[in-house]
Image (cartoon, rainbow, N blue to C red; front, side):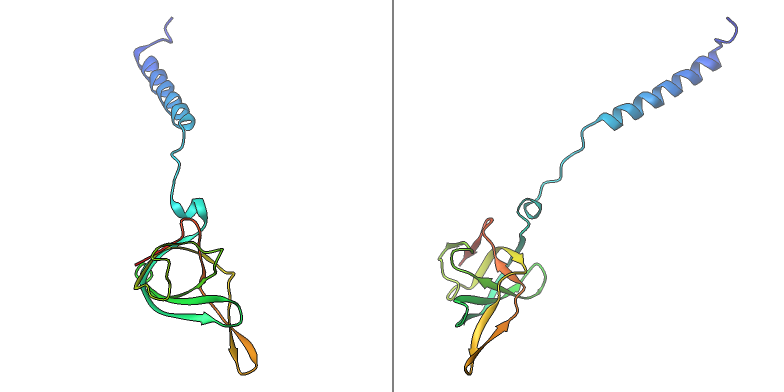
Length: 134
């Protein structure tokens, strides 16, 4: 068998190794990426409370927070029953807030004269895990 030369066998071994390596890489399990935001679809925030406004028409509160993550002011709605608070349970007297929020949703409505007007917000304080105050 003249066709089984060393050069031919070496080429066949390299090809076989390449095919086997490709099959192993394709069959290997993919690592899962785990993070809190993907699991709960809530965005983390943390920072200093600047001001809290009671929304007189809608029965919630609009909290202005200097968010250290984004380095900007975010406006979040605190809705009793939907937003979870921890520690001091007080968004009016808290200096610092740390938690998650959902975008969209909540609107703050306040009386202006005889009518109510809407104040927009960045989102609503979340419940997964909620907001801690200090």
